[in-house]
Image (cartoon, rainbow, N blue to C red; front, side):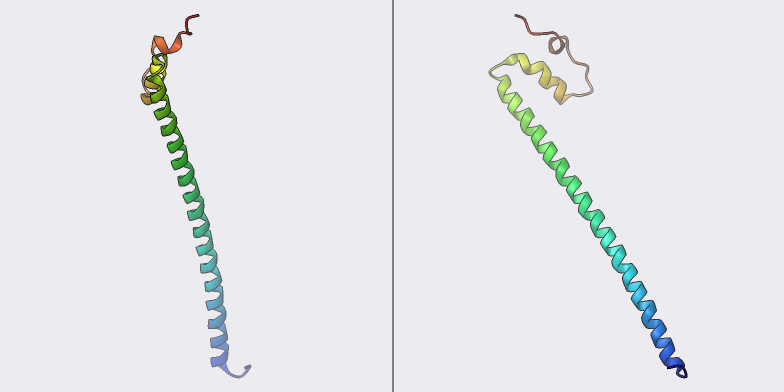
Length: 93
């Protein structure tokens, strides 16, 4: 192999290919892990949105029996609006 330049070139190309393969494998694993983390975050956000919608629906159903909660629902569905006086005042004894 000392006297054969073709073999030396082939070994060098093999080592370069092995290094590139290792680098691409690490890059793929990194991208895969980032994608998995993003999917978990999206799933968590969807679940949180589902729970919030269920809570709002249950509260709307409860408001049919107890209308005193209606001002709170209006604040929850329109977060930019200031709370009404009915929502802030304490319940009468």
